[in-house]
Image 1 (cartoon, rainbow, N blue to C red):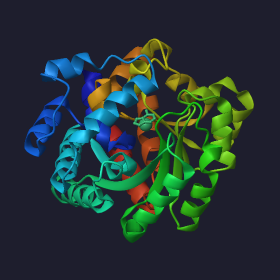
Image 2 (cartoon, helix red, strand yellow):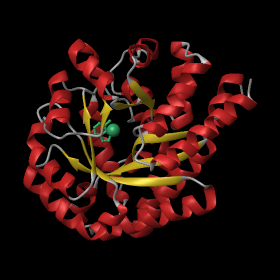
Image 3 (cartoon, rainbow, N blue to C red):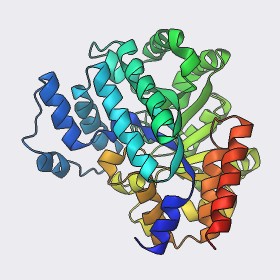
Length: 338
Ligand code: ADE
Ligand code: ZN
């Protein structure tokens, strides 16, 4: 391992943008398909990987929803999340705030309860055995209706003591945040944190809507905010966290090359950017891989890496004392690695 990779892997960090369904590795897809007797349109793991060539978000989403069809039992959700936690523990993660897409499952007849029970047990085990804490964020699929989102929020009500917040994902363009303004008001009234994917493919106006209509606590991606100077200044002023996903942006052709990724520009502008993996099984790398490839491509300094690590905790939904403890751990790590 090179110096950079070793430093990154040891640096305490959090992941704030991860779709648990996007951590489904092809090997696991075959395993779950076999044990659940689900037919797959692929003959081999190699064939699955060969299909992961995307030219935009929708290309990816079509395959991602197809892959999720092998997830049927509580044990599938448990095993999926457990494999993810093991990988990020090895990447130096101390905490993760993970998205799940209940509608992808309930629309296939998998009960909401089956999904969350599997995820909760994996989260509890990860905390006990790996020392990785986590929170769960329920994402509404924006290509579906407002009514379907309200119905999903209703199904979540018995579990709200263990759901930290709601988010908004899936096909962005044509499904602006405004479509879900009333659902997000209801979610906030329930005491939930709120986040939304905005400015991944969609225009700066969608970021404004996420801020003004959804009153988000974080913006997921947010890349296209940089096209609007007033919006950028506002995000800096508000200390808004952006959960940036460099390898995702590369694979979905949001950027042409990691060397032209806006992460460094975001940091230079004073934006509270973080580095995350989005859908690591589909985009070629988990948390540390995103950090390392981006740091190499952009020539990030050690100080910038430390800022990114600190941003991942200050932008989290952890309590202030927990955030302070993680920031002190980062300072101790940096002092011990001159
Ligand atoms: N669902 C999973 N990954 C996503 C992404 N990057 N954007 C929108 N929806 C998603
Ligand atoms: Zn995402």
